[in-house]
Image (cartoon, chains in turn red, yellow):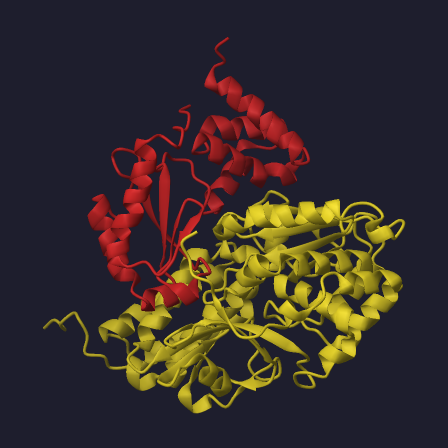
Length: 171
Length: 401
């Protein structure tokens, strides 16, 4: 039987709330799970979470908007976050930033039209001894040079092409 | 993973017998474990330097059967990466330290609050926890000690620097925005879900395990009178061998610079973005709670670095990371950044600079939490030590008229 995506989302959220303790303190892990599986946290997801935790949806939205790793809008399948903090800055982050923009054809804060990559800044990712550093989703790359930027992007493009990663479900 | 191994010198952590500390602790009474910690003189390694035994003692004295041990692995201070190295290379030591803390204060629950940027450390940590459960070093009747149960879960942060502040961290664990709380009440009596909670830095917990293994006196015999023991420093910036270095507290900045190969330094930022900028003339100052307290971040600036740009980078950081709940921090950082940009353009009068410095001092006094209180430090110390460099710049935009 075909289960509509919204129904599946609701069932998932119910499960995640239960496995994380069932009360308000489960909110952050639940939001992180939603984002991981459904690529973003939609208004609908926030409403469902609010209903199940018996809190106002605005409370949920307040939390989502507070944390820079949680997002409401559609972003790229791969989120690139370049560390902009001082040690990476001194190690040459500006040139890496420029090369990222050149390779992707977007500027920081944007997503490529094909939905593959989005480009963001990060504050200190804790790789200060090996700057410039960047994160692609949960993976970290250090001592990045403008030349390496192309290789990193090519690696992830290839992953998309052979469809190693399933497309996140739309809802 | 496409990273290099972080350079380190010889770390005490690599020479400690696994679980020797926990086994010794379980032969002692809870009060004796805290007494051992007290004898060590260990102070919080996250930077604030609160005596660990005092924190544990307060939580131990609180009456509750739902006490919590939180490991603060939200290492977000710019230039700090020692906790990443500890969590990657010595996860068992941290888990052991948490278990000892749980025993000492009478807690059953441990939570590691791991920053979202370190997601790649989650799986190895989960595996280490699972292994300890299988070895009866977590769970019920730990290591045969009947009645002592303790288990650890990992919770992920989501990219908010302020959550490294302990009350903001607790708010985040409870499913709220990471906004710091008024203190008192302190977490040791009203913490996670209103229960007595200790929040300790990763390194603090690792040292706790070493201290129980080797004795409080062993630890206290190193360092200075007010700053006992050894500490890990995260060194980055303009030096030949950036990495994680262990030194006894009381080491001078110059000694650290010599070891990391920084011959050409004109200044060092001690304590990260929230710390102070120390010019070359002061390199004989010591890294200790009584002189230059630090969470371990040292960023080295070579002769060619523009110190005003450094200040601007830090202010950008604080503007982004301020939670926005109190006015001095939310508005103050914006004004300081505006002022720093005026300086960069060569358009800031001495009178206005004095106003900016006064604003910075107000922020230090009036902000609600450590973020706002410490955010002007870098700007103020850079203006103070590098006046020639920041004033009267003949900058980019031509003066009209």
